[in-house]
Length: 484
Ligand code: ATP
Image 1 (cartoon, helix red, strand yellow):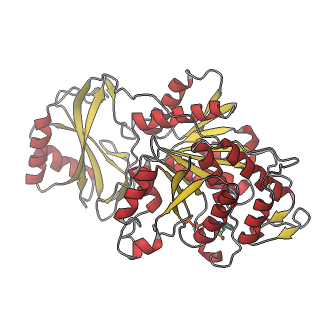
Image 2: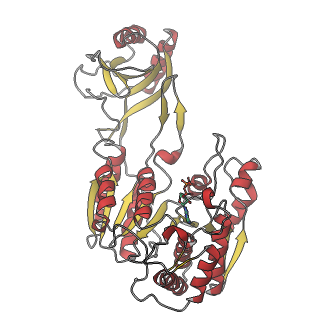
Image 3: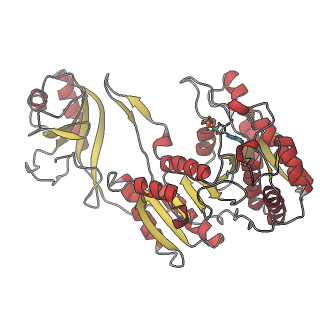
């Protein structure tokens, strides 16, 4: 039975590499039918701010499998990333990016490298919630959820099992972001207990990235947050030899998208020299996903054999290892000519995605108590003391000012004159029963916040944002101010 997939040829080198890949898929007799959609640059310029016309959504949702060429997002603040929109709208929560070396046929400083980055794909700083809050200060919210984190962590372990991988490394910055990244690493440790057959470690993202770059053979599967994974997987792709080699899968519960990890490479577009391998590897992952493992293997083997035979595109061409420098079209023909043949030394890649996650998230029963509010104030006051006096005077005993921070650093009480301040003040209001000098937070009522805000407004103090402070089962659901 044939499977219909959605295909977008994309922009820049997209049409060249997509056509090359479709030729290989057809020559291998994969029995696929294609519904083409026009997304990307042309759709942006036609006025669709996310680069997707409404009718394309219908096709995407109908076929459930999407092979996508790279897209150019036009410059300018009115355009939203098509990739991010598709991933989030269609719930493609896991981004899988395998990167391995093809030594000695492709130059790489790390002949043993074989790393798979499992990147969370819907949350984190990519939630796209940004604000300019005051004249001085801009903000981007980092949003992580328990369910999103559990899903990606489980996926990483399931993927590892399905592909007989040895170890999963969790990369986070939980020494600084204790609530968000801390939740991610806690979840990793908790879920990891269900996978005792797989090695597990948690590392800090900065040293972890440095080690991935210098000793990638220490790593196997890496699970990490959206932004870290984005950066890290470009590092791993480049280390493996070329961004032109690595494909990726974006997996959702119902719909999945397969694409090259590189962009539309406008610098070489239209010249017929782009390497179609990354998109071909993405297409092989797609074949496994639609349950055609034998076709995926045939194509992978033919592709590896082409590399071994020294038929290379310009991006991986090297004196000595290459015999022929070919363009996109001839490279595809070389792969087609080798369908049915096997590589002699390179081993076939692991492209299998994790099995479907049949778990149901259950929100843990939690006691949530309101215990304060952070009121963010825009003010060009001369000193924190002057602002504190105005706030204390305005509050009139409704709530108590506990501290003021500027860019997270405590500036009142007992601030240092050396701390440089912006016009953006975080003023923490708590119960009048709270003991001065302790970090205990007695409960408050919701109406006291509204009352406090109107008292501040009446005193000419401009609140630009509030953030409620909660205890969850008695545990603080907010960070302490630096120096609190
Ligand atoms: P984006 O922001 O969309 O990721 P970019 O300009 O940052 O785009 P790419 O489009 O991935 O990055 O290009 C980075 C470099 O890699 C360019 O010099 C490009 O020519 C090269 N490159 C990317 N893909 C290929 C490919 N398939 N074959 C050969 N070279 C490529």
